[in-house]
Image (cartoon, rainbow, N blue to C red):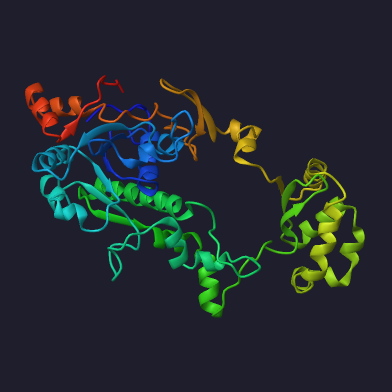
Length: 406
């Protein structure tokens, strides 16, 4: 396989075969690419449909771009015997294989864990699944919103009117990607100690539950679900200001309640017995919340943000994705970065979500052109140029016209 774009990255030298599509799997493998792994994206001839998902007017597909940077691409029809043999050859030198097909699909193609383990006993084989590897519905199709419903998250997030809602778009997919990456890293660590590879799985349903461990535990112990229904508490959540912009505060304890009344210029609220401490404030939130809402409507958002910060009350303006891209703290930490793309020019995108002092992550080169590394990989596997042309003529592989150096 090829060289890492980040030779100093924490995962430099790790080779990943990426059979994933849509969001959960591609995000996990993109994290590996950011940390220096050589991620080879295996697509079908014609390309994964993600490449054409939600295009802008000029054709730019932010969905695919954001999830596949720093990878390389080979186009192979894995349903053919020749394509299967190419994948087995690639797997012999891989450290990790990640896929998110329905359970059993790759097994039927002769490319499941047992087949890859036979050619590479050290392989870490990772499945990004819906329900998980077991259970009566493990082979059913699964999407993010379905996982949120199954796991109880949509019920937990019901509106005050009782309508089930999603926690956020792609919450299950994003959480599933992070748990999947964690499982693979753990398996690689085990392999370093024991020399043995293994199969790992991270599911959308399991990830939703994992992200809500505390709330699920509370519900199971008390046999009831405590739903947020808007604000977390009467003094923690979103408030609309005079200029119709919003802020969020988090006055969660007695000290912060004292600071909040100071920032609001309402010492009478601190002295009011109905709001003396947390439990009684919550018992009287139907009285307290309208009072706070009325006070916040007396000044503009930015003025309140300054006053809250001066009083040491946790606060933030409610920002759009467009606004957060100019937030000085976001920029200082590299959470939003500018990327040079040969086709689209300067592209702003999300940077690396965590930091490492010795082996930092990087934002890799632009997303791979379909099949840009197919010819190079065939040569590396010992196929002649004539054999490669024959495979292309029969639709087993696809080449990009110009090979892109990585």
